[in-house]
Length: 77
Image (cartoon, rainbow, N blue to C red; front, side, top):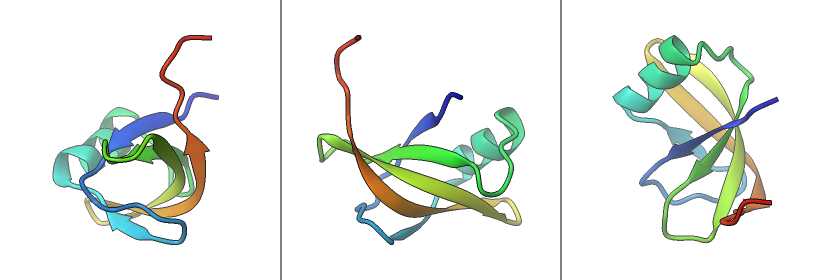
Protein backbone atom coordinates (compact mmCIF):
# COMPACT_ATOMS: atom_id res chain seq x y z
CA UNK A 1 0.00 0.00 0.00
CA UNK A 2 1.41 3.38 -1.00
CA UNK A 3 1.10 6.27 1.41
CA UNK A 4 1.15 9.73 -0.19
CA UNK A 5 3.64 12.30 1.11
CA UNK A 6 2.25 15.82 1.45
CA UNK A 7 4.09 19.08 2.23
CA UNK A 8 2.60 21.52 4.73
CA UNK A 9 3.88 24.78 6.19
CA UNK A 10 2.39 23.95 9.60
CA UNK A 11 4.42 22.89 12.59
CA UNK A 12 3.92 19.19 13.16
CA UNK A 13 3.70 17.26 16.42
CA UNK A 14 1.91 14.13 17.59
CA UNK A 15 -1.77 14.85 18.24
CA UNK A 16 -1.72 18.02 16.11
CA UNK A 17 -4.73 18.69 13.87
CA UNK A 18 -3.77 20.34 10.57
CA UNK A 19 -6.15 21.79 7.99
CA UNK A 20 -4.52 21.37 4.60
CA UNK A 21 -4.61 23.97 1.83
CA UNK A 22 -7.05 24.03 -1.08
CA UNK A 23 -4.69 22.45 -3.63
CA UNK A 24 -3.59 19.72 -1.22
CA UNK A 25 -7.18 18.98 -0.23
CA UNK A 26 -8.26 18.82 -3.89
CA UNK A 27 -5.35 16.49 -4.71
CA UNK A 28 -6.14 14.08 -1.86
CA UNK A 29 -9.90 14.03 -2.37
CA UNK A 30 -10.37 14.35 -6.13
CA UNK A 31 -7.14 13.15 -7.73
CA UNK A 32 -6.05 10.36 -5.38
CA UNK A 33 -9.67 9.76 -4.28
CA UNK A 34 -8.66 8.93 -0.74
CA UNK A 35 -11.40 8.03 1.68
CA UNK A 36 -11.82 9.40 5.21
CA UNK A 37 -9.45 7.63 7.58
CA UNK A 38 -6.77 7.14 4.92
CA UNK A 39 -3.14 7.55 5.96
CA UNK A 40 -0.78 10.20 4.59
CA UNK A 41 2.77 11.26 5.43
CA UNK A 42 3.16 14.94 6.24
CA UNK A 43 6.43 16.88 6.16
CA UNK A 44 7.22 20.55 6.62
CA UNK A 45 10.76 20.72 5.23
CA UNK A 46 12.16 22.07 8.50
CA UNK A 47 12.59 18.73 10.24
CA UNK A 48 14.30 15.58 8.97
CA UNK A 49 11.24 13.54 9.83
CA UNK A 50 7.83 12.73 8.40
CA UNK A 51 4.64 12.40 10.39
CA UNK A 52 2.01 9.73 9.83
CA UNK A 53 -1.48 11.25 9.81
CA UNK A 54 -5.03 10.19 9.11
CA UNK A 55 -7.27 12.44 7.05
CA UNK A 56 -10.90 13.39 7.25
CA UNK A 57 -12.79 15.69 4.91
CA UNK A 58 -14.87 18.66 6.01
CA UNK A 59 -16.56 19.86 2.85
CA UNK A 60 -13.75 20.64 0.40
CA UNK A 61 -11.05 20.79 3.10
CA UNK A 62 -8.86 17.90 4.21
CA UNK A 63 -8.07 17.79 7.92
CA UNK A 64 -5.15 15.64 9.06
CA UNK A 65 -4.61 14.33 12.58
CA UNK A 66 -0.95 13.56 13.24
CA UNK A 67 -0.55 10.12 14.79
CA UNK A 68 3.18 9.40 14.96
CA UNK A 69 6.67 10.30 13.78
CA UNK A 70 8.40 8.42 10.94
CA UNK A 71 12.09 8.96 10.18
CA UNK A 72 12.41 10.33 6.63
CA UNK A 73 14.38 8.16 4.24
CA UNK A 74 16.45 10.22 1.81
CA UNK A 75 18.21 7.37 0.04
CA UNK A 76 16.85 4.62 -2.13
CA UNK A 77 17.08 1.18 -0.50
